[in-house]
Each structure stands twice: as structure tokens, then as C-alpha cells.
Length: 485
Image (cartoon, rainbow, N blue to C red; front, top):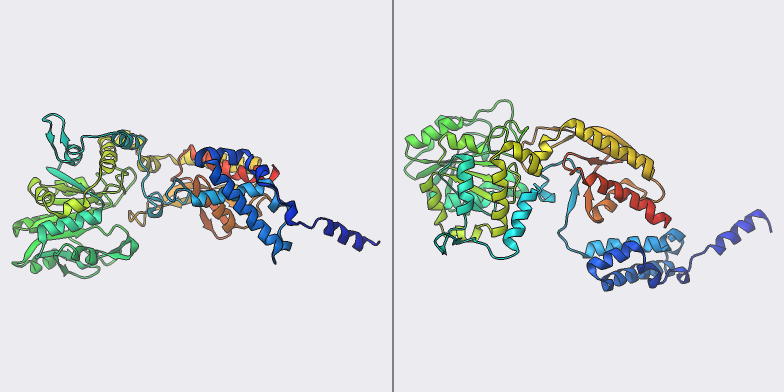
């Protein structure tokens, strides 16, 4: 036979058939599957392995037979695919390593909670709690009493209440204070927020009548003054958290608005949205209105989020004058939008940390990320890139980049950051394309979400905890280990 015939015979001898597929028992004994069996049970693991083997068998018997190579039927490949199936069929809500460079990524749950907040949740959830019980008198209490004391100390307000998010805080405030009456607001502040929700549509639910003044880019104090009539209940200022108008713009200051409202016998409500507490709290955030500033200026009520710049759980906080907060607290809608014990526990722990900004910068994750020295990010990025090159064989490079707060906060302010960029070609053991590699990180445990930029995959360390660097490296090493075992 000539050389060509020998090559054809060799190729024919390597043809894969369904008989070459590994037995279920030969696969489920692998360490990675044994570990998963301890978490989800052996029955679930066996079912996943059988599903994968059945999928490969169907490909071998169908039109895709020539596309199946020996690597695809190896026990390691079967096990890896089974783990992917188990990941997708497991809990839908799970931990994610945020390597996107967006610190308050709405899709990834915004601010991670501090260790103290998590411990507080566990403490009040592992048994009963004094949620609405006064331990001193032995009588029924008010569920926000504990939170209110801390908020008063932190903000300098008279009273405070908590609901499930800031949109709910706005709705209940307008309902209690301006139902059937007018609330004056600048036209340039009626923005659309996440999920295609528009503020006018949200406000309408309250029954208040919005009276728009000024233009998109310019609103003067005289516009507010001329709009006030016998049906006016309050002046509302809304912080346009997720966008900026620059250039030919004008808005009156909070002092002018408070003075006008009080001179005309009206309430002034300030919706600061993202919730910066004070200058430097959190650190390195400039240009945001602060809650303390609004309280000091004489605002009757200030509304803000607990899960944005405060760095706590999702909730809406209402702080201000005692009589104003009491009117809202007694509104029937409060029953429908009140926060539960886990949220209140996490919020109280976050607020207590915020009382000491220096302590908060070491304990509240968002504040820690914002306060992280650039040099420390550089060291981490260089170390991770070097490990990826030396231990996993990837083309990895530490780069300078820009991160952003996100979550509708400080949209234009870039945060200097460091990242690891991984470029193709990838080792044979890894997914071949940038998109498939990014997906492999997203569907694993823990899920890791990087950025895909042009033809590279980027792991921004701005919102990655230092201990998570090793988890990113371990995922890269998994590609190598599973292919060689």
C-alpha cells in the first residue's frame, strides 16, 4: 500500500463509535463529581452524567459524528459537561465574582454586604428576634425603632423610616404628603431609571399631581415661585443620578428651594437617590449631593437608597422632620412596602459602620473598593497575570483601565483601575474563542463575569475581593487539569 492508503487506514482505525463512550460508573468516581455529589446528592450527579453520555451518543449516531473527537468522549470531558449541567440546574441565584469593573452592577446585585451585615442577618434569622417587640416593656414595638436611632445619629435628622427601595420611598412620600395635590418638580429632573421605568409614571401611582417647571436644561427659582398655587403641597427635587446635562444649564441650589418652600408654607422633599451620606462617605465620590447636606439645609424629607453609595442592602430610606416622617409612617401603603427583618439587620450593621468612616473603609465592601490604593491593584494584577502565563499557559498581561461606580451613581466619573487582559490564541485545553471562554467562566462555580473587549477577555480587579484572585486563577487551571486527566 502507498502512503495515502496507510493514512486512510490509520484514520479509519481511529473512528469513534458509541461503544467507545465511557461507562457511567467510570465517570462518576472522578474527584470533581464526587465533591459535587456531597453537595447535591449522588442521584443528581448520575443523572447529569447519563444525560451528557446520551447527548454524545446521539451525535455519534447522527450527522455530527465526524465532529466528535476523542477528547470529547474522555471521562474528564464528560465530567466537565456534567458539572455545567448541574450548575445550570442548581440554585438560580448564586454568588458571582464581579470582574466587570462596574462596582454597583445592577445585574449583579449592586453592593455586596459587609461581614458584619451578613452576621447580623444570620443572627436574626437563625431564631426569633425583637423585630416588633420592646424587650424593656414586654410590649409590642415598632420595627424601625432600632434603625431610626442609628439614622438620627448618622444624619442629624429627627426621624427616619425604611421601605423596600427608593422608588417605593418616593411613592409613599408623595401619597402621604401630596395625594390629590400638586408636587412641583423641574422638567429636567423627570428621568427614566433602570428597567424602562419613568419617574412620572412611578409618581402618578401616588395620586399626586406633578407640576413641571422650567426646561430640560434650565430651571430658575422664579419658575418654582410662579408655579405655586392653592393646590400645591410641596416642592420636589430629584437627583438625576444616571445622567448629566452639561454646558448651558441652570438649577437653583437646595438653599434657595428650601427657603422658597418654607416661605410659601410648603414642604421641601429632596430625592438624592444614590445616597452619599456626607463628604468623604463613601470615599472618592465627588459631585454627588449628600443626605447630610440636605438635612442641614432644612429639607423636610430626604429620600435615598441603602444599596448604592451607602453599600448596604436594597431598601429606601426616608429621613427628616419627625412630624413629616410620622405622616408617612401611618399611611396604609407602608404596610405593603415595609422591609423585612433581614434587610433591617443588614442595614443597621451597615449604618453603624458608616458612623466611623475610617472603620467603614475597612469593612463595607463598596467603600473598601473605592478606597483601595492603585498600587495594591497593580501588584495583584501583575501577580495574577504572571501566574496565568507560568501556570496555565495563557497570554495574560496586566493593564491599566477605568472602572465605574454604576447603579445610577456618578455616571461620568471614571475610577483608575488595573485589570488582567487575556488574549488568544488560548491553550488547546481551553475554550477556543473569546466568547466561549467568557461563557465558561460565567456558567462555572462560582460564576465569574469578566468584560469582553474586541478580541480579548478582561478581568477588572476594581470590584474583585483580593481572595477571589485565586479563584480566577483556579478556574484557568481547571481547563488544564481536566484536559490532562
